[in-house]
Figure 1 (tube, rainbow, N blue to C red):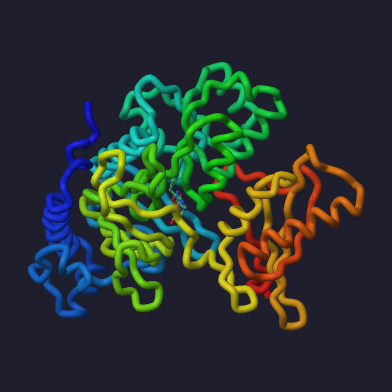
Figure 2: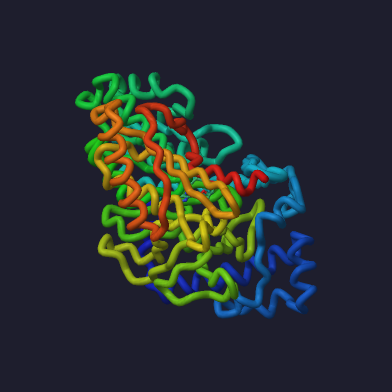
Length: 432
Ligand code: DLL
């Protein structure tokens, strides 16, 4: 069986044609089934017939997370609840949860998209895959699960919460693939090392996502575990994991663009930018029934490349995420992303890639302290050695971000390990 390989191998013209047809149908669908969109379109005198293809997409209004919150819980649903067979929700740190609903058809498309991603990561029916994303309202666990089942892999629904059991079963079952956040996989590699199990695992492939991670972190994880690690992207509002994934060439993430039309927007003007230029990613769901979204602003920063990939796929690729619009810290006027710190730390062999950025304001001046955990092999209580290492890391980070920082080295195993999405920033300025 092939997961829409034909669609992945469409020419650009064929893809644009399909997307245009689907966009027109979608606009008609939301106009007649979602009051929110009908009102938004009426407000700018737009009728469904005015949208004749992709070339008209910029006439359509954007949708934001606030729109989902304002219509909480089911206000953007396009079908009656009797058609909804699953609900997921993401809590976020502030405000109401954003709630999404799936029809049976939506679940079918979702599992197909995840199946495509797993196929890109080399997973097949011959694999035993541990799904170690959280199961529940978060889309990671159930989303990855359904896609893996669809390709016939043997799925072990680990969820999060018991790393010791996970590593034991990884060895006992001979697991060949794992799906979890990159920060959790880094932690799992430490547990495996501590337990002396590293040479007993059969792991080949990891499908990691749900949080930003750098290319250097990917290399680090691959080396530690002797595997290939793939980057899978998605968001609950649009579907969940499986919106995009990178293939064996790791040259950007292939978007399932027959279902999700991507646009990259200038962060200030919100006008589409040229290929290769970084901006905010927005998606229009082309086939969703439960909660179709038009031009949903993800806040994720990336660029797009529509040239064919060396793997043969013709789908558009988005570059590895730099971070989110709201992840970017402005410290003394300089823009800093956590991913820059991660990339710098991976270069320093005496420390682990676990870190915490603490931003504060002292005497009206922003101060960035980076807590870095020393690798147990290099741990020493000799003050001069620690001072020298601190200076070295401060220099490496200053080179990376162009800003002086204060580094504080902490003892091995002191920074909190994450099983889900890692938290790397405490901004005390926001807590005032
Ligand atoms: O994180 C869905 C998911 C689960 C994706 C498992 C991949 C694997 P949300 O909780 O709604 O959904 O969070 C979505 O997480 O807007 C990005 O900011 C971030 N994110 C997800 N995947 C990646 C990735 C899931 N590969 C938000 N790289 C998105 C960078 C990612 N950021």
